[in-house]
Image (cartoon, helix red, strand yellow):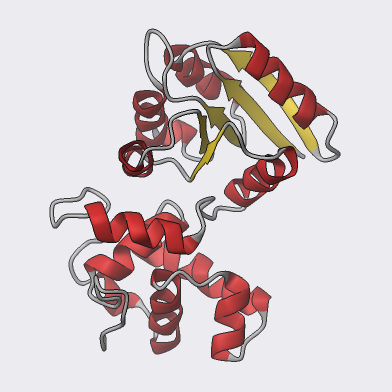
Length: 225
């Protein structure tokens, strides 16, 4: 069961999304809140698997609420999916830097939204890997807080370095499996282990790590580790 908290100041949108989620097998709506401050409190109290968060809300916006949730170890298990009308690159980047695992527009199709919640719940980035990489190429700078610790790559095996490079290039688990001639489950296992070794919060953080470490060049190519 995937337990979801909804945070949006527009009651009509909250109710519509709640109805959609409630009618989907394997999902449960834990609650609805109308601002970012309430989202932080409800996340702490209810422990949802996924928080579907709007950006522009009163009292506290969704990006600041995401930042506070991700900074609290007691709420570390809750993933954040940004659902907003504002899909500008700046908002996407700020949301990812704050710790969101995904970002979709309110115009997305219902089945795509449900898939997004599933993907975020599984610990992956909702944005397509190529879109994530494009944002990183455009905005990432050497002072980013998401950079991996110096020397962290030394903990990775040669195969894990290959997998991290694939992630940085925008490959899905299925694509990694095909490129490296391994099973999809093995690819998932490698990604999970890399996340643990690099203390990465999600797949987006791995993409950032691949760029910051030089495994993937800013031009979209790869470099030798």
